[in-house]
Amino acid sequence: MRQFLTSMTFAFGLTGLAAPSLAATQYPLTITNCGQQVTFEKAPAKIVSIGQGMTEILFSLGLADKIAGTAVWVGPVLPQYAEANSKIKRLADNDPSFESVVGAEPDLVAAEFEWHVGAQGSVGTREQFSGLGINTYVAPADCVAKVNADGGDGVRKELFTMDLIYQEIAELSEIFDIKDRGDALIADLKKREADAVASISGASAKNLPVVFWFSSKEVNGDAFIAGKNGAPAYILKTLGAANVVTTEEEWPLVGWETIAQANPAVIVIATMDRRRYAADDPKVKLGFLENDPVTRELDAVKNKRFVMMDAQSMNPTIRTIDGIEILAKGIKSSGLAQ
Image (tube, rainbow, N blue to C red; front, side, top):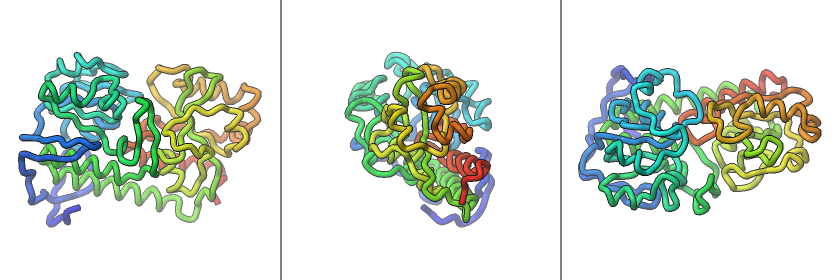
């Protein structure tokens, strides 16, 4: 990361101060993204962003005026971008059609997940878009040391870290020739991450068993629980807590009988506006946990140790740092921190 030489204030909602980067992007620019080479003859003029996490990074980089359409939302946008977001066409709350994306006439489609834009993309393949002269960019956090061959949430072979988000910010800022903004955003996020870790110094969770519940297709069926290498695992490692699930799948379906054997001390419950699955509603989750004959016997349920966390903080996004802060606060308030 370049050293900052002087200071100036940005009007992009950043708390950090940074200087303009002296090196401008040299076009044509070729980058390797998720195993594919992508060449940009100039900075893209129109973007379709597929994935809330991707959209919020673009907003954080001050690129709202270039976004022609968005899709795949699980909850409200970050409050500081609500006004900008309200002026942008939402192609779909969930998966948009290939036709609707192309119809927005973008020269870049930026996706948070390969299962939307990838080899088996539910929206389209990268080849389909490139055949129409449209470049694609996929978040590195969804492909570095991660296999998405089944078209689902994928299998993560190495622990996610925020370095992958910093890589995404750096690459996007180079693509759009706004390296100064990227440097400032990365510096701001790194400071927040350091502050979050410092906030629990001396109050580590000490291998406290924790489970992250995203949702379930059926309320009383198997649950989508965080695997051992995703963003929740990074949050847990940062706080010193332990994941009750050891699979490399990003969000494996796990039976509550299996979870009961680990008897988690804390259950982190995803909150979201999305209502794709039966258990998307956090109130439904709580009702199940407190009434099911298996789950109501869990230590976390008996002691009402529930931590409500925005679903986006459970995905590899800039909000993962929020997740560290939220869980640290929840563990402290429960009296479990040692």
